[in-house]
Image (cartoon, rainbow, N blue to C red):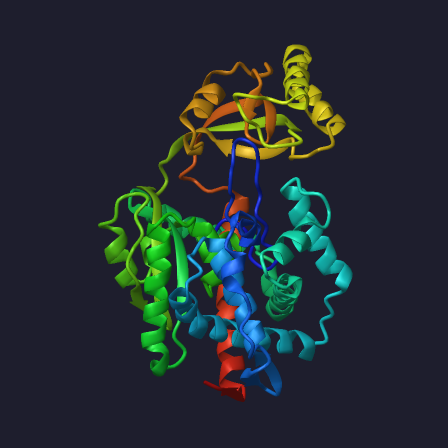
Length: 444
């Protein structure tokens, strides 16, 4: 459902400084760089052993080891033998499903060029202000084969193209579709709706129920220990919303499974549920907020920023000469910029290390209180004082600030909701068909 069409573009982590640290959507592989545990994850000698055969295609223990290593590193899970063993059944299941998706891509003669994959990885690096080739080096340093990332990206791109092909004319949302969605929302005005994130763990066979429950319990343990929900969802969820870090957006009661709805109605904002049995598997949900349908006043900002990176991490007690020069440069920009165009030009001159235009930002959703205060009070068209972080300095300018009733979705938002529902339904139906027809030999 909900905030962005799924396939139709690649999931990317966006590290926007300083307004957004992590947007949904997420491909969470960048979190790998935070992991110091590679030495504890050395491959075992029997990596060539066959774990499963999917319609004649082999999945080896090395494939499973690489993926569960990637999962552990990127989500911050401790790399103990117990945790890795818990991951193994679900990782294997996901690799089987991924192989089925890849086979369907190939059956439809959809070609994902190496250049497509390279461009996607390059975009990840650019969005995170990393020099080209950083991902390969970081993954290698942490003991994860670069092929693991390449394989994931290849399947994600290809599966998205399969869904687009499958939907055909349904990928186009008509005015009549919009009018019907608007009518349904108007009929529910005043009722409560929920902004939720979901991690969906499928159970395709009753014999898998215990393993899925253990896997879900492991996920929840890590979430409650502080692992970011979007990162975990993007790695583990088998819903199409995984591509956006599990974000379902604002969902009305009639769109929510009754068992999930009963839990949501009792949850405080920010809480994470226990695994909830739903048709086809288990659902783990987090509640981002509640509101009345049709009523949600908020302050919407557009901003521009210039980001000037430090060459090395900042030690506030001993800044380097380069860091002092960067700060002076930021002060000059803050004193001379008179319009948002000036900030854009300064950011371009600095190499566009971070996007100058971050799109619309809801003031109330800015997590840092100090930054929220700056954005609320900074006069439009006036540059902020330099905002210093460990990796660089930013100067921000507010270009517009307006009050809106965000409870009334725009035409674009309604279009995305409808399309998201169609993509999710198409994805699940096609996967069920592929699983039913597949010849899978899973070995212990």
